Amino acid sequence: MAKLILQSGRERSVLRRHPWLFAGAIAHLSGRAKAGDTVDILADDGRALGRAAFSPESQIRARLWTFDPEETIDDAFFKRKVAQAVERRQALPELVGQQGLRLLHAESDGLPGVIADQYGDTVVLQLTSAGAEKWRSAIVGALQKATGCARIFERSDSEVRRLEGLEPVTGWLLGEAPKTPLVIDENGVRLGVDIAGGHKTGFYLDQRENRLLLRTLAAGKSVLNCFCYTGGFSLQALAGGASEVLSIDSSEPALVQAEANLALNPDLPAERAQWLETDVFQALRDFRKEGRLFDIVVLDPPKFAPSAAHAERAARAYKDVNLFGFRMLKPGGLLMTYSCSGGVGLEMFQKIIADAAHDAGREARIVRRLAGSADHPVALNFPEGEYLKGLLVQA
Ligand code: SAH
Image (cartoon, rainbow, N blue to C red; front, side, top):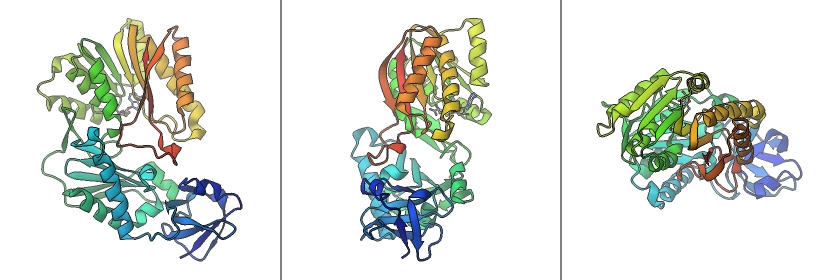
């Protein structure tokens, strides 16, 4: 096996079990290794630190599979890791019985570059690193064994694969397309999931707990749901007794699915729901002119900052959308606001929201800090895993 020898002092992050090694941390490669091959990681004094997947095209040159220099990376390794991740979720009562569930959350489950989401008996796999790509069939076998799923679909078409020199790949890895559309029950609401054409693996499972929180807040309230995608928050608001729910998204297919989702739930009062296909920034400007106000405003925008380098521009976009959001709120209203940008940390996000409130001339207070659902854990040795953050703010 080839050896990757680190620069002096650069073993420190590995000793703290951070799984990434950037190009600048590496002194040299001893032996030959291709993209995705397993390499031994050595400190400059020759001490063995663990084993990693080599990624010659990426700035993240290696991702550690294990911090045990003796552990073999083979099919059995992936069986163990996948089984443990599934068991951890089964040990959390709130996740037991969820039909939509993230099974593998990459680095935070000890599997860099591997994401797997379960929708009923179908698992959607996304591989984003050269190492994950190399072990595709081992991961598929492990997922099948741990879940007993009937089908596995690959959605490895995320942009980040380019940084690894990987082409987009999609298609069935196990079984074939089901005859009927895929539908999950999320806390009493039925939602269709387009695993082949939808965003990410088809659905935003990370907001499950937050959608449920909205349900508990919505009775008798008017709700504005911005960036609604397929209506997850909107339907929970209706289930919670909202008096009206106006949902906005710029994506036509997302709204077509949202209306189909509403139809899947005949118990919900469809007449209280309204869908608007437009740009949120434009819509909120127009509403302001019309003087429209809501009891609850949800803002769940897309990732404005893919990395810390984009943070400044993203900060302006977050500031603007939250400023508009505050202006839409009735006195005493609630703003439920999120950022899923890894490059925007919690402290920065809170500051942006404070600036937005100030510019809107609103005095407001945080009544809850919000995060991703429990099946999207953040490993303590991998703080980068904390991408989704939110605040519930009372004006
Ligand atoms: N809250 C959703 C997930 C939102 S994802 C849920 O719980 O499922 C972000 C959404 O913002 C996507 O559906 C995308 O189509 C939409 N979007 C991105 N930019 C937009 C814009 N400028 N105006 C309106 N919608 C936008």
